[in-house]
Image (cartoon, rainbow, N blue to C red; front, top):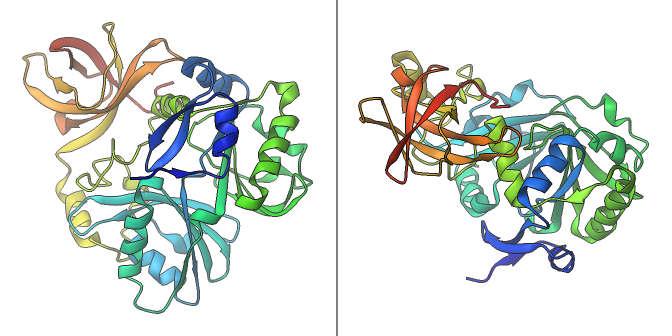
Length: 360
């Protein structure tokens, strides 16, 4: 299958990025070294091209009803200029995808979905669109840059008269940015380091990318690849679809009870409510390695007696902590913070402790 290319594919290649297939796209995994890029974002500022993400526009008097029907969170609570983290539950207790819902105007929403699930999510939402909501898939027309890190706001402020410091977390503004009109500046991100996500039309992508890099020169801004994006999100305990959540994991098991609102009916809400009342049997937790070793996806997790009590869903060496960290599902009785567990690394049980998220 041919890989899709983001608008700035050639620029990334010219910058010397190592390109890899990711979610059907040719994507930059790193430009220099993962650890260097990770630390740049944690301590200063970096820019990611995450234009592979999908965007749908839902418009009309029944747009909110459709969003309420297919998502677990309560979208009636968000105002224009606010974004909400949510998920699409399936009919079997699992998750179709996790996503962001942006309220752009009365009766107009933008839904941002994972690249690997664009077609799947489009078909899923369309299936429930029985009231003629106007749906447009703008994924192939949009670019998305995540400018993340403690110095991100001061870099981006040079490019707009919009007061970025006044935009609260999970809120956004639409305005002129880098000389381009109608740019979405969103105080969201996947790193826990602060910053903004900038949505622009493909036709303006190269100009905006260059403007951001130029504005960030005094702060030493660097392009950052997907490798560092993964270690940054793991330190925060943010779920990655396909690893920590999927069609078989319930939002309650994944620690996403806070985006699962039973004040309304949505797909499979009755059985999820029942699961909440009866209690979950497994839970997604974060952990830190006590012994030296790096946990990886699908490694078994054991108790002190060698019984299998779970499995790792994401794992890495944390650049910030200098130790192995991970996420994984554990039987409920082993899921409390500070519980001793053992990760089977190359068939050797290495000690770890369950930790409260975030891990840094």
